[in-house]
Length: 78
Image 1 (spheres, one colour):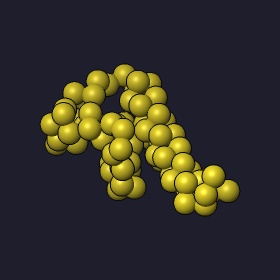
Image 2 (tube, rainbow, N blue to C red; image 1 turned 180 degrees about the horizontal axis):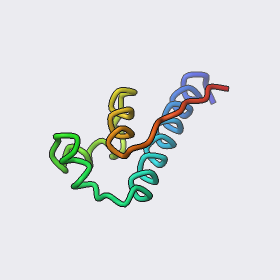
Image 3 (cartoon, rainbow, N blue to C red; image 1 turned 90 degrees about the horizontal axis):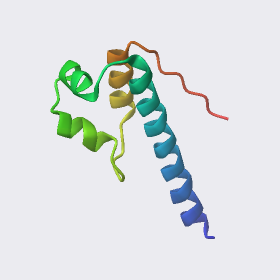
């Protein structure tokens, strides 16, 4: 596997891990995606797209989602 392919795979794996962690946090929070979308001031379709394949959530958007879920995001770089 080329270095470029390894880099792309690593990126996609990280994005997927973030999306899964956020999805889990939403479920554990007890609020619906519709309620979260309303809190964020976005349409439910927009929120659902954020969790779709190929979408790249920004760090700011992750922080915003966490804020509205009442959790504090943490990052560990190893």
